[in-house]
Structure formats: structure tokens, C-alpha cells
Length: 258
Image (cartoon, rainbow, N blue to C red; front, side):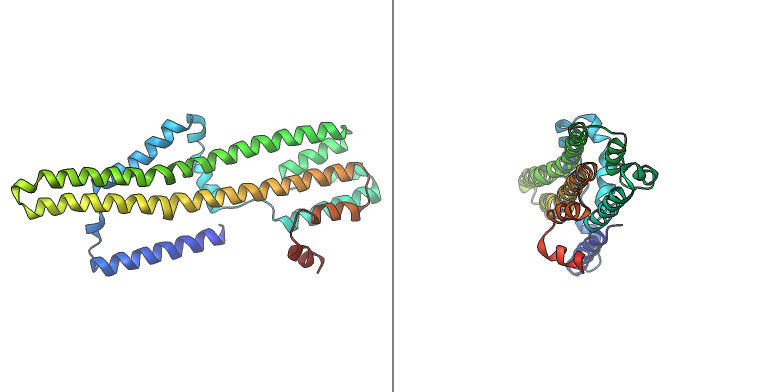
């Protein structure tokens, strides 16, 4: 599991739980409203179904899994692996990499090296891998879009729930029933709270994390692509390494050199 995601969840839930306990003195049921839950939860989900095709909606569990578990290779590991492949290809020839392809954990890199070993032209390798990069970017964009929609419309449905609760409260003014007025007001306030929590504590952070991971993976695969082309061209391993290091900031280059 991704450590930063887990730490964020624990801190957020802990702070929210503590505040709710202090305010309610342990009576958490005062924060529950079925009407508000249906309005914000059901409304937000309905928006995603209206805005996205069913094929993308079926991939929602994968989006959540990607938020909690990050299986992509770290940038430093990509650089080390490409350096090893470059040195071996320069020393023993590019055909010597064929035995290592099956052991590479990254399918994108394995596919690119296989095309290079098979003798495909550099432009063919580059165009094929860039098509795969474009397809991956589209998949990642859909995952972020799902949570961006909830972030955008969740508070809106919370506002709708608030307005509905206020209408109900005004409708009860003639009865002067404090209990009914309080219940309608609670629906109004709780709906807004649900919308704010959904947008700022759930959908927003998940969408932002998916966006960052997408950018990191695109960068890593661009590094792999340049490394594959460098290896196929028979360039010096040092030149290949310099190309890899050009993708990372200065402090990381110093750390890698150390």
C-alpha cells in the first residue's frame, strides 16, 4: 500500500472523528441524515454515470486500487535498469538482452526492448511506443476525470440538499413544531457538510494523487523510450545514462551518483 495515501487517510479520519466526538459528545447519530446521504452520494454518482461512458465506469475499482497501491517502478530503479541494459548491450551485443526481457517487471520496457532485439527500425519502435503512451494517458485521464466530477458536483448536490431542507423548514413554520423545524434544519446543514467532505477529503485528494502518478509514469516511460533508442543505436552507456539523468532534478542526480 502507498504509505503517503495511508498516512493521509489515518490523519484525516482521526481529525474528523475527534472533532465529531467532541461536538456530539459521542452521539454520532446526530451527524447522520439519510436524505443528505442520498442527495450528495446518489447525486454525485449519477453525475459520473451521465458524464462518462459505461466502459470507463467499470474501471472505477481500478482507479481506487491505483490510489492505494502504486506498482510502477521508481525513477531511480528505471535509471539503474536502463544503465545495466545499456552496459550489457554494449559489451555483449543487443541480442544478449533477449534472455533478460522476460525478467523485466515493466511491460512497456520489455515490449520496447523486444522490438529492438528483433531488429525493428528506430522510427517503428518510437511510433509504436508513443501510441501506447497516448493510450495510457487517456486511461489515466479518465480515472482523474471521475474524481474531478465528484469533487465538482458533490458540493453542488450538498447545496441542493440544503435548499430542500430549508424549504421543508419554512413549510413547518406555521406549525411552530420545534422538533420538525430542527429536523429540517439538520438535513440542510448536514447535506452541505457531506458535500464538503466528499469534495475536499475524498474525491479531491484521490484525483490529485492519480494525476501526479500519471505524470510520473509518463516521465518514466519516456525515459525508457529514450533509453531503448539509445541502446539500439549502440551509444556509449555513459551517454545513455546522461540521457536518463536529464529527466530528473539536480538533487536526485547527486543522490544517484552517490
